[in-house]
Length: 158
Image (cartoon, rainbow, N blue to C red; front, top):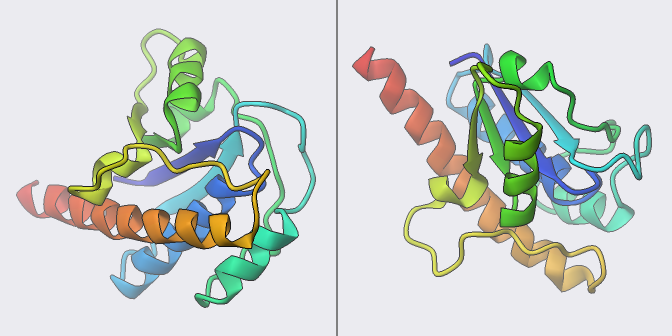
């Protein structure tokens, strides 16, 4: 396992938060060699910073995403990243449409790694209030811990 790509629609809310949360858990686990990145399936916000509400919510949990800049998923990402994790079913479906035949990246729903949750998608907090960002972060942090546990278990089993 060398790399993880986190994906949402615009790459300004959920996926930057997820990138930061996964990076934080990887660093605490001593797995600093694993690359993380995030991207959007749309190009609406390319080059822009994360939503200020996402930055604020992440900072409240000691996750700094302020230097990240939005980018759009590219065909090369499907070979560059081992795990490509979508925040919701719509972005998962879009990733499957974009994935080139024969590419090596494995597309997942991010919350597959969160264990037994009653939901399988991270809701988009963009059009809601700040509490939506906190709820998204709760889900994202649980999935980040599960993803790193999954990666560590795969590394141990060879």
